[in-house]
Amino acid sequence: MREIVHVQIGQCGNGIGAKFWEVIADEHGLTPDGNFQGESDLQSQRLNVYFVEGADKRYVPRAILVDLDPSSVNNVLSGAWGKMFKPDNVATGKAGTGNNWAKGYYTEGAELISVALDLIRTEAEACDLIQGIQLVHSLGGGSGGGMSALLMTKLKEEYPETIIKSYCVIPHSSMPTVVVEPYNAILTLVKAIDCNDQTFCVDNRAMHHICTNVLKLTTPTFTDTNRIISNYMSGITTCFRFPGQLNTDLRKLLVNLVPFPRLHFFIPGYAPLYSRSAAPYVKLDVAELTKQLFHANSMFVYCDPTRAKFLTVAVIFRGRMSTKYVDEQMLNIRSKNSPHFIEWIPNNIQTAICDIPPRGINMSGSMISNSTAIQKPVKRLMSAFDDMLKKRAYLHWYTNEGMDESEFNESYSTMYDLLFEYQQHQEAVAETSIVDESTEYEE
Image 1 (cartoon, rainbow, N blue to C red):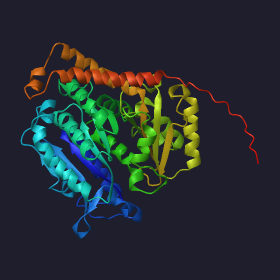
Image 2: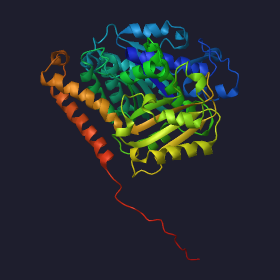
Image 3: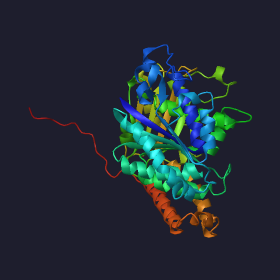
Image 4: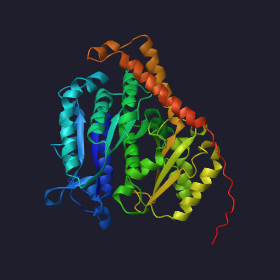
């Protein structure tokens, strides 16, 4: 079985991770104690991808919970689904990082990293054939940023052939929680360029926009945003977990979505998203899902996709539907929006279909887009990063932990090169034009 090892890091990572396990355990018919009470054999057929079968037919998540501040992990373990997790698969420090990236990467995190790696190694070695390692974390925190960056680096050294993918939350200046977020985020993104194979970016502002303007929630909470992100994570992993008409896996996604090795920062999208009051007026079909998925309101990064270009796109549908109709809709969206797709990569939309719908609805769609629109949130972070760096603000907190000032300048330069690469491919045009001529073959 093609297994995946899951690692959730920091307060944000543990919050999203806990909700993710709740969603997929429910889909597989597992109780909060890990006992299977499903209605169909399909629910248990590929449980091994994310779960380990323990004693008494009890299923345990293949998850490692990491944080330098033990409070977030304790919250998960004391929650309604906390009994499902293996208590030994926890790596926590005694005190937090105080949102200091250098503490997570150089000092406090460096002391805890061997414990986390041992736990990951134990889970990876127990797999028959490991498919990948997925991390869930924020970019702006000390643990979520600093320790995640260190973990990515170590994992790439130890598992060079295994796919490392990250679900990371990007901070936004209009919703700041920590003043040094731009430093932490850029320093982490730089490490992700070389140490990550797939990076799924989630923007705080986009999630707030979806909750308030699309779902029409008056007082959205982190529980609401975590559930949307978890539904998306469940959607794109559905083909690994259930049989379907058109299947995909991490390797197929990687090959189709990443045309250049450094350009692996994806913008997620999820449908259906609508308010409860609008639900009776929406006819849910493939056409509606496709329309929503390619709209900015369904994307998890606050950007305008019409001012950028899609390099590649993958869409995973869930529910009973015709493959022919799905192909027609993809062709339709590609031809209608041809200026927003790179012309020199033909057929750059990959599709997969899983027959098992999510709980409560007949069908859903999850989109992974490799778009040049990712430049916008990164530019915003770089601008804030540069403004503080010019004044050398807050640098002493980082240098006190043994970090060199030159690393800040190098990180800025590396991110600038990445943005330039995205822009270069956005402006590139097809250089050859092949005329389709009928060829006569000799008998």
